[in-house]
Image (cartoon, rainbow over all chains, first blue to last red; front, top):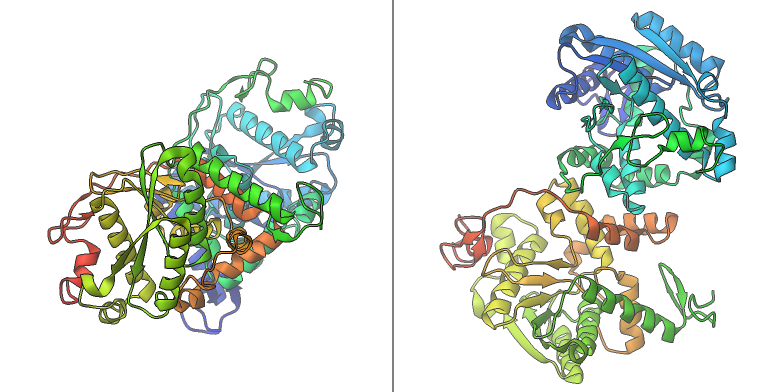
Length: 297
Length: 297
């Protein structure tokens, strides 16, 4: 297969077709820059914190934002959360993140679950009979929002890719979580003084594209960014591959139309958690219920 | 597999599981009656016209509405459109429709394309280089709305099933037709004095369920309700089968959540076609452009 742009020999094969390495880099970086500008994700003077895990998605996100930093004119730092679970965060992932940040001259901030709360994620999952991934999701959302704000950043960037977004869409759709679907956007503006604006620069990039980008750019990344729990149960990965095979370009086309979807959702009034003061629509936020109330509540 | 309800031997296998014949009929009829009431699709005093094609879906729809007729208290007649294309409408399909209407004591109204316009659907499709199915869609929507209203009915019922709805969803989503998605509802209320309210009593019933119902009830129906054109191109049928296999109950769950989706869509102002006076958002409606302007316009 020839390169889609220059017709030279194609070396990189992604969903939309083949590219030579140079053209792929151009295609990919332009795509991200375009979406960042289109949705005014980052404007001059912003202070952006990128959540990194050591995987290809968040590493590509960090790499790209560090390239855009001077062009747009904003401040950039990284956040790594040590979840205290070997499968997801370990000395290897941490070393990879540290190396990339050093290379890009981006300050890295590390949060360690063990230093924040006494209980571990697995312990809470066992206590509450909830999947580890759901507890982990609560933890990450909570810590990312709290520290982004407390450290004086106004935006939190994550490496969510098009595959993630389409999967989230289906899972939340089928569970009837339409309010969550309304938030599947490249930018989710703050709706409460304590809630930071979240941005997803890789919203239109597929997993395969991020993998290709990270590989060509030559930075190290861990091959499995998701914990084993999630992978095992996730049939949607297989389903999306099947759809993509039958209907080329499905994923990218799907997220582009998701950008246009405007839903009428009754606003849920956010208030402050009675224990920690973080924004929540409950009396006591999920994080405090799980980690600060002895497993009850 | 045992019957889901009574644990006797299962005879009918549909997406949600197996049923014996009696329990399936109860499950199916209750489901339709529930959705009709939930969305106030039909209220006492309504005059409802059902569009029938001779296929399992519209025949089941007619059968069920004729059962609900006395219970709710509304008037019911049927409409059959002879499209002038052998593949879709022919003496056999017409005979089947006539027989069912006689059996149910429902008055049948027949419209013949040839008596309304001089050109045929295929001729127009060739002239305009459009797929036959898209021209056919324009024709059906136009004639169904016009005659439902002119004959004094206030509601038009169609046999669209959950499979249709999910397929429409994906196709329109990927083409960016979000306004069409906003109309994928069990009831689409009129937004113009000349536009009739459309209802879809089988919104939550799958193709398989309609097939099973029509078979048990023992009325004749044509096995292929869709023209050969559509079937050939439709990869979504295969995709939905795959998803359903991996994720049992996907289709029904999907349409149920679609019922809850409320979109913010800028209202398109409807006006009246300058040629025929039917509602349209164009100067001249698609039907007139196609069939009354010598292929131009």
